[in-house]
Length: 413
Image (tube, rainbow, N blue to C red):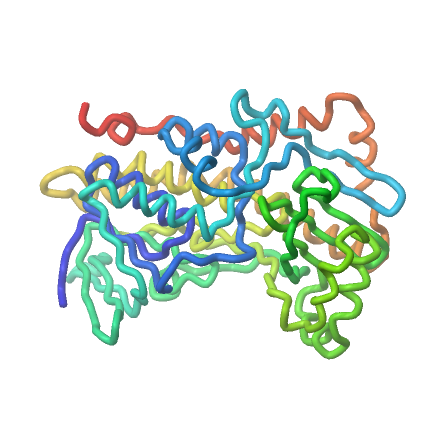
């Protein structure tokens, strides 16, 4: 079965779904392919930063999203040791309307965005569609892809293929683009427990450190997501020794969880997330663009992988709406636009990855040396009035989205 479209987006994660929505909103025919049969995502990035909420508000989506999807909020990032807490970032002035990170589960965010995209006739969705090959024209330019669905092979020709299929991107693997791993020192084991009305009022983004162990505590609307950090590659050893050390650390630092930890009895109840930082030699080749984790794996450090993917999507939509709306489409214009996406986004991504590599290496050293404290400079700055708000403000500026193309905001104008 052969069909055609202007743009095919492979991967129904945050970057792919938002890019497909923006293109469809502007009237560009776009097909979104998702390998899974649904959008269920657990223990994936779900923290929407204040400036990203401002962006969604500009699109008329933030308030409907927050009204429709139960979520948690975090107005600070707090690092606590057994003896002291350090408020390292304070988001209460990071946005006039949304002075917090909104912790919106991906399993709810993605269907919401697909519902918005489906209101536009230019949008088409294929679930259970697994990419199997890229197709090329006589000049070697990517001209579409092949995928399997319901036991059938399909071919989809397109003026542009976008790989938004995550850290293990099949589209990237099929392309000529090369990935390099920059950091792999830590893994995180995640588990979820119910949240109760009388639980302590934590910030929503908490790091609890003690000698030899670090816990992440994320506040969802109805649950706590708890992350236990281990050295990279040591999950088999944890499996061999059992769940005891994880449960013991949770009980020491979060004793108020009480009976909610009684059911944590098996390592298989943990979801393993390897912490990886991956770069590629380039984000595009003729007829192809990578965005989100397919182009750059952002580690969970800082919780901004989701936000970087959304900013990629906005930049890509801004640049591509014009070339993909032309009739006929000029391949050279499309390829110039994909190169411009990388030129605009890569410097920020590279800076973030350098910083994350440094943080990840430091965290691995602290696990080894059993020092639970933040780095010295952070400890010193945490005691200076106003610094936590300045840190949050600078972080928010770094996540500011570019102005949205008027053809997306006002497609009928």
